[in-house]
Structures are given as C-alpha cells and as structure tokens.
Amino acid sequence: MDRIRVLLIDDEPGFTRMLKLNLERRGFEVRVENDGATAHSVAREFLPNFIFLDVIMPDVDGGEVASKIRSDPGLKEVPIVFLTAGVSKEATRVKGNVIGNETYLAKPASVDEVVRCIEKSLGKKAGIGSRSL
Amino acid sequence: MTQEYLVAHRSWQAWGVLAAGMAFTGLLGAYILSLLGQSANVERLVAQRTEELHRANEETKSAQLQLVQAAKLESVGRLAAGVAHEVKNPLAVILFAIDYLKESVDSKDPNVPTALNDAREAVVRADAVIRALLDFSTGAELTPSVQDVNDVLQKALLLVRHAITKAHILVVEEFEEGLPPAMLDTNKFEQVLVNLFINAIDAMPNGGRLTVRTRQERLKGVGPEVGARRTDRFRVDVSVIVVEIEDTGTGIEEGAQARLFDPFFTTKSPGKGTGLGLAVCKSIIALHGGTVGIANKEGGGGARATVVMRSVRPQGEGTTDG
Image (tube, rainbow over all chains, first blue to last red; front, side, top):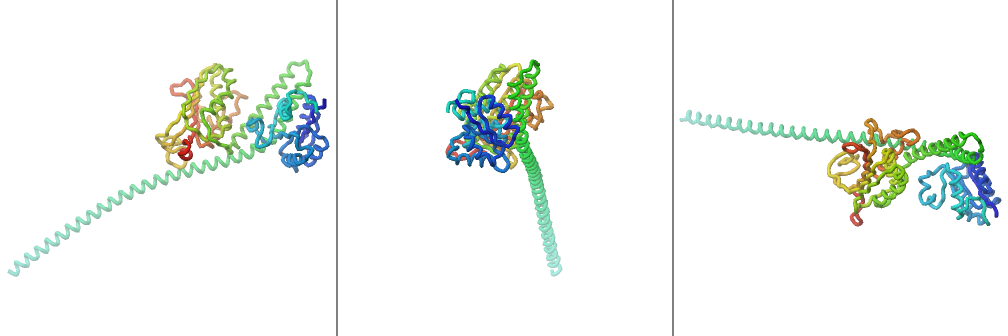
C-alpha cells in the first residue's frame, strides 16, 4: 500500500505548510511547491496522484501551470483541483465544484473538505491517504 | 334738390363710415379674442412643456443618481475582489492551523477546545462577510435561462428545510398553477429566496407559519416603479409574476423599515447576520429587472416580502413582457 502523493502548488508558504501538516497526518505523502515557474518540473519528478493548484500566482499563474502539466504525457491524467481565493463557495457549489471544465475548491476550506475533494477526484471512499496503486 | 341729394349722399357716407367702423370693431374684437385664445393655448403649451421639462429633469437626476450608485458599486466591487483574495488566504491558513491544533492539543484545560471552536467560528464568520461583500458587488454577471418560478421556489425551500423543521415552522405553499415562465439566473434567484426564507424563519423563533405564494398579475395602474417613464421598472399593462413570502413573526420595527435594504444594516444579533443579505437580494432582483420589497402585513402579525418579476410570454408570442 503506497500513500497517495499530493502536490501542493501555491505561492503562500504559510498555506502550503499548514495544509501539508494536516494532509500528512491523514496519511498522504505531500510535496510543496511555492513557485509556479518550477511547478511543472517538480511534478515530473514527484509524479503525484493528485494536484492542488493555486490560480493567482506571480510570474507563472495556475492556468499556465495546468496547461504545461496537461500537455505532458506522463502527467496529463493527474487530476488537478484549483484551490483558490478567487471563487466563492456559492460558485463552487454549482455542479459539484465544477465551473466550466475545471474543478475548484474555494479558500478557506476545512481539512475535511480538502480530503473529501481528493477522495472524490480519485474515486475513493476511505479517509486515509493511502491506496493500492 | 342738389342740397337734398348731398344730405342724402352724406347720410349714406355716414352710414358707410358707421358700418365700416362697426365691421372694423368686430374684426378687431375677433382678432383680440383670437389673440386671447392663442394666449390661452400658449399658456397651456408652456405649462405642458414646463411639466415635461420638470419630468425630464427628474429623470436626469434619477439617472445621475443611478450612475453614481453604479460607479460606487464598481469601486466597492474592485475593492472587495482585492480584499477577498488578500483576506481569504490568511483565513485559509488560520483554518488549517485550527484544524491541526484541534487534533494535536492534548490539554486538560477544558477551555482549549472552546477557544479553538470560537476561533474556527470567527474564521467562518469573517469568510461569510467577505463572500456577501463579493456577492453584493460582483453580482452583475447573470446567467439567465427560462425557468418555472414555482420549481425554483420549491428547490429553495428544500435548502432551508432543516432550519424550518428546527424552528417548528409550518410551510403553506399557495402556488398558482400555469404560471408563465421567467428569465432567471437560478443560482442567484435561489440565493435571494433562501435569504428571504431565512429572514422569515429568524423572525419566528417560537415557531409559526411561512406562506409562500405565487401569482400572475397584469399591472393596471401607475404606481411606485410602474409607469411610462424610462426610469420606471415596469410599464402599465405588462404581465408580471408576484412572489410573496409571509411570516407570522415579530414584524419589522418602525425605524427599521426605511433601512432594510441598506448595506450593513441588520436587526439580527451580532454574529447572526452580515447586514448584506437584503442589499444583495435587492441588487440581484434589480439585475433581473424586478423589484423586491418587505413590509409588515396589513393588520400586523408578521411581515411580507414581495418579489415582482417580469414573465416570459408563451412560445411563439415573442419576447419578454415589458
């Protein structure tokens, strides 16, 4: 049983640090990247099962990072959820967090919401961050 | 003989002069009368033009006020969007930290869980205020579609079912059958309805009756927001859908009536309302081209919220009314 690997891409170190602590305690393996410009290369190296991606970042924003990851044959199947302060909970409530073709989770979210979001994206019910790969 | 002729001749001349004089006087009188008539006409025209100018002036003033209001809202919108991003990120960090501490702190002090819960609720409340501010200022984007108002009402009632049951409130649905559809952004309209329902529920802490009523109505006479001027929301004789939400609660206090839709005005206890709910409702309904009002019921015993929306004509009969 390998742990589920989650990559957190967000330019707020305090945010990624707190989320990493919470997710690791729930059994996930977490890698943090605070720079959009190097996020793609980190993803290629870490090979995550799931990616949380901030939308508004300096230099290279979330949209650009998502585009690079999706055009990478080794990463294109990895689910990406945009975890952002730029949308409201009301907006994300519509059609199970999907706006357009993208999935969003509005900040601030509780750890339970974050874990539910990962489980839903990976089609998994157990609340432990591990699975048979 | 010659003298007699002359006398007679002069007499004819005198008659002639007299007749000409009378004719002239008559013509002069007629001319003066015509002038007087024209003067009355001119006065009537001046009065009419003055009234039109006055009305145009009022419309211009109203349009100017609307422009100022729109500019203010735009500024608030820009500010709110910036504030939302800058504040939501720290809130997210605090929320994750609280969640982490809740599972980590093993203290014998019973106040620790209380303190963490209070902190968590404070974050949720701050987030609610920011969300409401965003809704208030950035609600300009509607995604309207043709909807059955009765259906949307029923869905909105489902969302507050828990609060209704908890407060021991009886719901009475008086939905008119065959109601014409309306162009609605269902999410935003649902948000308005939920807000009005919650206000009604909060006004009945000891239980009561929530009546939700719909009907189609043809606006017959000129009234507030109804008329022929450009600034009037509805034209006389258009078909509208009226939604009424009535409670049997405490009613609206006298001083509060005029300020109900003002941003940050609330009669709820601290922490229960952001004071933006009704301001958001008004903004959303106005975007739909409708009106919303709240008043105490005739004879007291609760309040009634009334939403008036334009209806859509049945297929094949053209576009929206009004």
